[in-house]
Structures are given as structure tokens and as C-alpha cells.
Amino acid sequence: MAATFASPSTVVGLGGTATSMSSPPMKTRLSSGFLKSGVTARNPLRLAGACGGKFTCFERDWLRRDFNVIGFGLIGWIAPSSIPAIDGKSLTGLFFESIGTELAHFPTPPPLTSQFWLWLVLWHLGLFITLTFGQIGFKGRNEDYFKY
Image (tube, rainbow, N blue to C red; front, side):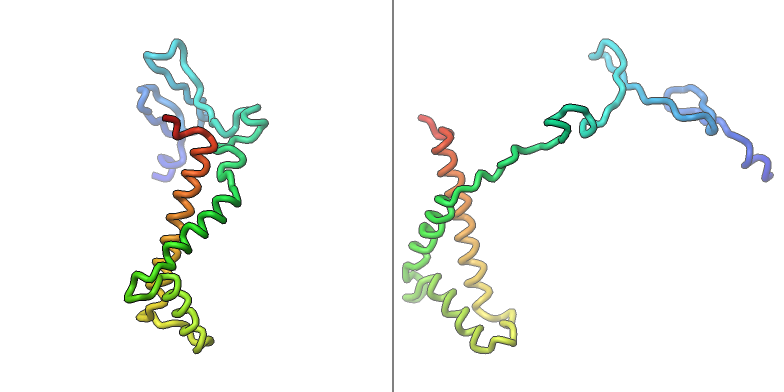
């Protein structure tokens, strides 16, 4: 019985040809009715000369960071969030007030039931949405995306 497992076995693959387990593997050749000849599968990350030897999916400066967007976006969020709309108080005022309240007992972190977390999430969510739309609008206008 041990001799059965030690002898080289033959496996029939999907192509229908019998190959020996001890023989070296052959290169995979892909063929299609759309191609004139078989094509060897290649890894696109190893192609020589692609982007100077490097393969990148994005431009080098994909963020296209501009400090005008950050400055105007911050002002564009602080102005409306400072309008007293929540029981005569502004979102910015409530957020900064809750920071002061939580700093009063500094080594102890704020409890999960504290209003601080609500104001923190709302204020920053509004800021990030404003910055995102500011980036889209500012760069779109500079690069003529919004032609009419």
C-alpha cells in the first residue's frame, strides 16, 4: 500500500491531457475566439517601462491640495454653525462649551452619555462635508468642469 502512494501518479486536467505529477508545470496559454493567437498570461505590475518602471493607479498629486479650500471651507463652516439655532445657542458654541465642561474634570474621560460626543460628531461632520464640497467646487471651477 505504501508503494501506491510513493509512485508518481497521473492527473487528467481540464484540457483532457494527462500530466504527470512529477513533471514540471507548463506555462499557461490563454486563447480566445477574439484573439488571433494564444496569449501568455502576464502580471501588469511587472511590465517593464510602465510609468518609468513603477506601476501607479493615480496621478502623483491626486489630492491637488490647495490651502484656499481649507481656509474658505473652515470659514464657510464656522459662519453658519455659529448661528444661534439650537435653543438660542449655536452648534459651535455648544461644541466649545462642552469641551470646557469636559476639561473641568480632565483626567476622567467624558462618559458615553455626554452631549460632548453629539456636538463633536455633528460639528466635524459638517466641517468635512463643507471641505469636500469646497474641494469639488473650487477645483471644478479651476479645471473648467462646470462649463455651460
